[in-house]
Image (cartoon, rainbow, N blue to C red):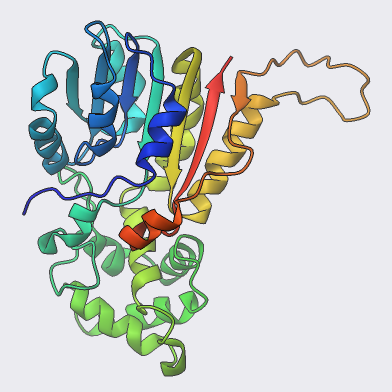
Length: 310
């Protein structure tokens, strides 16, 4: 299938990037190239764009979508946590703007064999980078009950995490859990019937396993400071999150770089010497408009936060 992906908060992201025609811009989660296309349209001859994605299907789709701008773009198959290293290899030390659109793409959700969605009965996979060995099937069949509980509770924020983990372990004692359909049935049995009306019973557990499989929160946490430091003065980092834990990580990292002082509050002047790296542009996150929510229900939990280097 073609790489369909609705670019969430597109206008708001492009506006907040403050694109300079001769600047250098990076999209660390390229997807189908929706945000990328709007960035490259604004670049002059000297402007450069680097698109990074770990999914081979995304790189291929974005390459087609951005074909008219070949002289300005470089596409790199990698995880955005390696952004600094892969750009250094291309003699780029500093950039004027970075975009991250986190979470799973519409293409990944809608491609049956990728195993991201509870809507299809297919092999459990959920790898964003199909070169990695760990799959959702390995997690479901190999993690201890307490680990499964922790993941489903923390990453899925599911109130039935303990029971779901217990049911998974009990089921796999009889036979390995191979497919999304099998996992669906196990989750369904672990949730009281009257509670299954609030959305699909598997939604939170599938999200949790996907986040664990792709180390999504760990990668984000470990990359933020480096990305902020990579910015030129006036450069901006725009991040779209879809999960409360992602949003908390971004909000905390931005705040820390805006006010890094570690002196006790009672000190009359700062003596730690830690200087702000920049400022948070979005004191409150930017949310999708009513029109966007009507057009794309998947944008419901999206939040955009922006940091500017001083």
